[in-house]
Length: 114
Length: 109
Image (cartoon, rainbow over all chains, first blue to last red; front, side):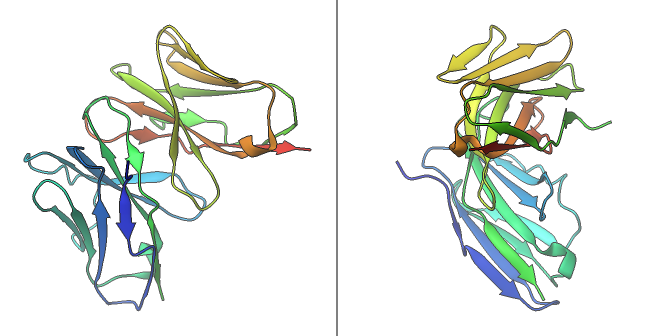
């Protein structure tokens, strides 16, 4: 079946602009996660959605970052007033069962802030 | 101390060799464990879950030692295509997975 999809695959933006990144999880997966990975670094957790519960935003690095998930499916990560240090690959993952379940990743969006 | 610690490597091994990676985790409440594989500039992909009794998938064997809080991955008969970064991943049930920083494997002809 279809895996996790993300768009755009690449995004180049100027410092100070806002960007929106989209994630479409695997159908039927109730949990959705956003991570980011800077060049040569490990994965950094950003935010987690589970069903209709309030999201866990504890990993968001600043209030310039926000995310929403509409209808329990598609999610959008928004970065306002982008900075050069926001340049990274933003990865979305979804999971059928939360807490202990395996997560499946999308191909990521490579964000470059110039 | 990091929640999940791995030797970054690189491990450079010849084709056909057996190689083992270890990983330690700090949270004794951790409930599930995985190995993911990440190729250069690609997303992580699930390689295998790790069960208490140990489990095997072809050339790959994973072991879990809860008492010592470490996880291992053994790759037998290494192939060139095994070259990648191997991520040790732990789920404490709080929220998302906690990833180690990865161990890089380079299999040489």
